[in-house]
Amino acid sequence: MKVKYFDELKKSMTFLGSQKKTIFIGQAVEVPGTAMSNTLKNVPRKKLLELPVAEEMQMGITLGLAMEGSVPISIFPRWNFLLYGINQLVNHLDKYYIMTGTKKLKVIIRTGIGSQRPLHPQYQHIGDYTNAIKSMCTSIDIIKLKEAHDVFPAYKKAFNRKDGKSTIIVEYGDYYNEK
Image (cartoon, rainbow, N blue to C red):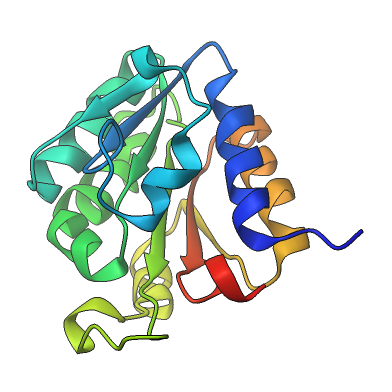
């Protein structure tokens, strides 16, 4: 049986939601609002932390949660929104171990390339900044989810990794209904 992209995302979020140290943070995590919201339906509500649209603050809170021992899944529905949190991502999360020498932080950042079908949302919603961010980060792994069968293994790897790296996982909005 062929796996579906959306079903694998939902399975991945259910898996992460069942882990003791995880917490989901972002906009439209407790309330509907994005396609990503629908993948969180099986995550316990006590693990969902809804935030206002304040991406740099979100990334700062994400960093703080990780420093306290949680494994935050910080959700930015599109790369275009994550751009507002780049200061915290590049200058703090990515360099945390280099600056402190104490411990490496495990954060899972979930973002996406906005869907263009059936309706093009305009260019401020469809950016793919993967290569630019890869060039700025030395200790964060970035994984693009091009196929449905790659989804669950990527999220499982991000959670179970022992190398101390945080992971940005990039989804394709068009694939939620197409693959």
